Image (cartoon, rainbow, N blue to C red):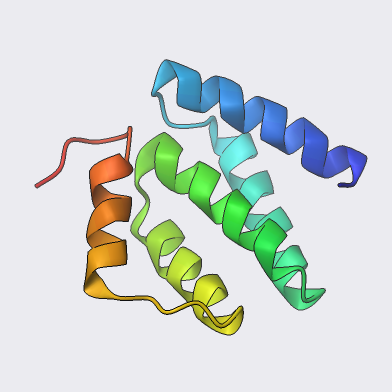
Length: 95
């Protein structure tokens, strides 16, 4: 993992541990890093970055991109998988 990825992972881990949304700059950096990883075909890295964002704030775009990266990697994305993702979130309360 690149040094930037390590830094982002540490920052996101601390945000997840507090169950607070990441700061705006951290959120934007995470999204940029995830999009860059997709562009470089590092789909597993991208999925982990989107997963960290999902766990921090349950951003709908994160869930969509987790599914997209998983699908591109050949994983079967079913409604049950998405329900598990929703149930595992530590951000906002489930609706």
